[in-house]
Amino acid sequence: MAVPNVPHRNRDTLPHTWTKVRRLVQLACLALFAVYPATHAWTAHSRGADNPVRERLIQGHFAASGFHLGPLSLNLADPMAVLEVFAASHQVTVKLLVAALIVAAFYWLLGGRAFCGWVCPLGTVLDVAEPVNRRIRKRFNLRTRELDPSLKYRLLLLSLVVSAATGLTCFELISPIFAVSRAVAFGVTSGLFVVALVVAFELLVSRRGWCESLCPVGALYGLIGKVSPVRVEIDHAVCDECKVCARYCITPRILDPPIDRETTAVISGDCTLCGACIDDCPTGALTMKLAFRTSGAGRPIPRPNAVTPT
Image (tube, helix red, strand yellow):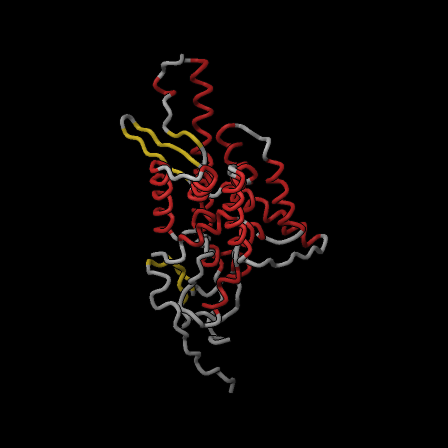
């Protein structure tokens, strides 16, 4: 260890602020799309079709949605879904392109895969299932394998090629992300068996393997966030390389370069900025900062001479 005398804080006494805030945001995002169906059904029966309460403040789901407030209207669309539509239809629609660029710009500003860690409805389901899966794996001594993280980029390209060849938005039709979204927004539960398959896959085959190695939506957001104004930085003066932070990270491999003193920050586009590493770092070496990931983050950090006991 580079800094053997840094005191460790007990994980049970840490505030876990990032995780708590993230849970609130995840639930708020689900609630946001669940409010309209509930209020629509109630007002349709109790107050008549012309009641202004029935006007849609939010409509749609995570693939495509609209926000309406009086004369103001803002259309948003998932970049992956829009790329599939363009590939399947062999044409580009300006309205859809603008809606996707707004979302892409928003997540570029936040860090690309912040969608995966903070908003994705499937990610919320997997976060809830993870403690249960962890106990089951421990109880039955189940071992999971690591998958190639680059596989998701090949699947992203494949889904677009197949969409172009078939004229169908192939991934969106089977996507567990949009299956959860449709269930929340419209009460359509027919696709939830795919979600169950993903949960089982994460239990039996690869822990968080879907998010890290298979999801084409995550791949696209990773590309968007490769150069982001937000990143997790490490203070090598207090990091003792214990790697406790990696135990609770969705993609623990991205923490290896900063922990091994190869970089001053997490520079991988696969970082979801979930904050779990910050919450669980026992020495407080990790922080979230506003600084481009490629700005001075790639230079090697000289390792101090090891301290030898006297």
